[in-house]
Image (cartoon, rainbow, N blue to C red; front, side, top):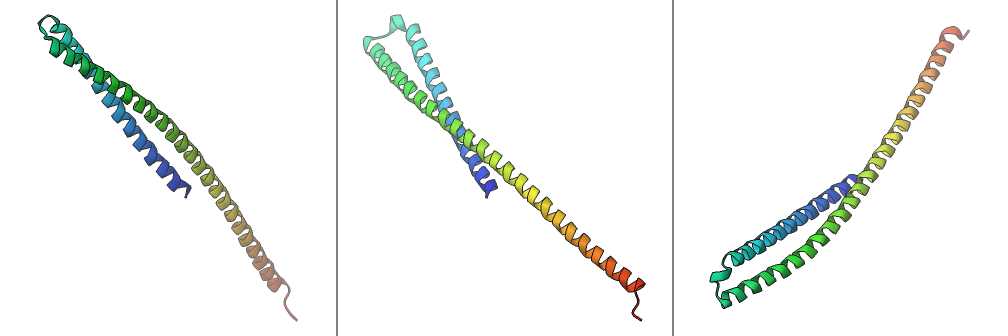
Length: 137
């Protein structure tokens, strides 16, 4: 059961990492796109119409709002990754504890079985000795 919980935590952590990477990539693309538009605007500054300039500024504003929104989503994804990583660590520790307890329990069981077996062997040896040394008359 603890192993299954750990596996589920690993899957959940992996999914949250994928979501974080998606948001990081999306943010990076938006920032790059915004920079490219701004660079084009600077290069075309003298030969640009007022309508085109207005459209470009509106587009840059839109990209900036998108960047803020995606950045907020990325921050949430980072928090989710951190939470899932904590859960995964906790599950891994619990699994190790249960494995140690199981191993300890099994070792005690083997010791008891060896004691029982030794006791039976001792009884057999005593019985054999008694039969060989003390014969009925």
